[in-house]
Amino acid sequence: MKILSVASEVYPLIKTGGLADVAGALPAALAAIGVDMHVLLPGYSSVMAKLVNPVRLLEFDDLIGVGAAILACRLDGIQYLVLDAPELFDREGGPYTDASGKDHPDNWRRFAALCRAAALITETGLDDWFPDIVHAHDWQAGLVPVYIKHTTASPVPTVMTVHNLAFQGQFSPAIFAELGLPQSVFTMDGVEYYGDVSYLKGGLQLASAITTVSPTYAQEIRTPEFGMGLEGLINARSADLHGIVNGIDTEVWDPAADPMIAAGYSHGKLKQRQINRKALAERFGLDNAPGPVFTVVSRLTWQKGMDVLAEAADEIVGMGGRLAILGAGDPALEAALAEAAERHPGKIGVIIGYDEALSHLIQAGGDALLVPSRFEPCGLTQLCGLRYGNVPIVARTGGLADTIIDANEAASAARVATGFQFSPVTTDALLQAVRSAIRAFAEPKTWNRLQDRGMKSDVSWERSAARYVELYSRLLAARSDKQPSDD
Ligand code: ADP
View (cartoon, rainbow, N blue to C red):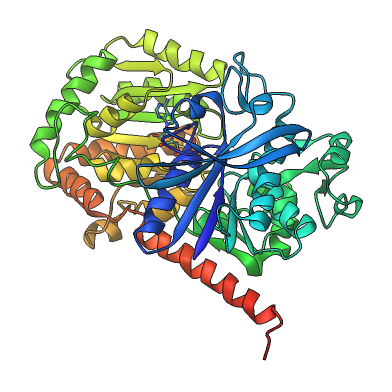
């Protein structure tokens, strides 16, 4: 089975969030069960700099108005296909924004080019490699099903995965004429969305199957509260909608062999963990009070409930907890958390920024991980928290609800709890969960049991990769049923 995956970020080449982790880990997990996934991504300058001996396989004179080429490069067993289009991708800033944080004004062209290239690859192949299925991730790849359906002679099946419905890629109708799509696609059955062009909506409308990254989020996005205006369409397509929870790369996230932490450890041998706890306290300037160190690794945004955390910070400290927060995002929330740290020197430490290595130390040295998200398609940090014995305290929503078992009485008696859940996302509910955690932390046996169970839970890709393969197989079978046969 040959799959072309299309994503705007892929770890370890380029990452701003969980999408990159998933797009990077899935090909390796699939390779382990004999599925050949190539990954197409944009040739941002930082990506180009990491390629080793890339091979130029395909050239385009006019890909949505620019010259471009596909470069193939195999790194650490993953086959990358990089869209080399300097006019679109060789620039300062992040994948989506300029150096000042503003969206690139031609994002519509940049990601339409990526999608068009994917569709063209299904027709021309690359050195005789023809994908059987194309798997598109998020709005940046939303036009993949659209181009495949409307511009290729023999459309291959497509899968559209939603990692976060909040980002939809909505642009002025004026760009439609430049996309090279038939006029008939600018309708309600295509990419038209309240008069604009919506890339994600087009993808959801035309993909053979839709997946999202947890069963609970798959249900939630059918409601107005979480559907972000697309709930009608998603409901109409509910027969083709699947929730498949993400895993994490258990080699990158392995407390027994993690070069980014102060001391390796494994379940049953948690004493060594104290060395990481000490290193963490030093990095965040925390004193060594007896209460738990609550940690956060997150984008600092409203979605992630960081305003609620900022409001709860004083009381968490009042209850004897400590806070170590790593993140970047909304300037007002960055400021609110920094102020909390100033109010409580030695008790709250805040580091603003993006720091991969520090995120590992936090998981290795923290006692509990706070994830108060208002919505969370899957969430990865809580999976890392489980694996590292950093007990997750999560909002009961989306993938958080699916991956953490709340330490309520029944679950505790049955010895299956792995963390704490709370709902709704309010300061009171968060503080209630923090209080329960502080109580449990005061009984080392109880706490160690929670940690140990989390560390033993399966957060790998194995099960989820198998579910994707099941879905791919079903789509291929449906396709061959439809195709005229010779006999
Ligand atoms: P989202 O994709 O919505 O940001 P996820 O929990 O799915 O949230 O994935 C976030 C990923 O990014 C995790 O791997 C997390 O460790 C990482 N991350 C988030 N913020 C930071 C940061 N400031 N420094 C390092 N890693 C971060």
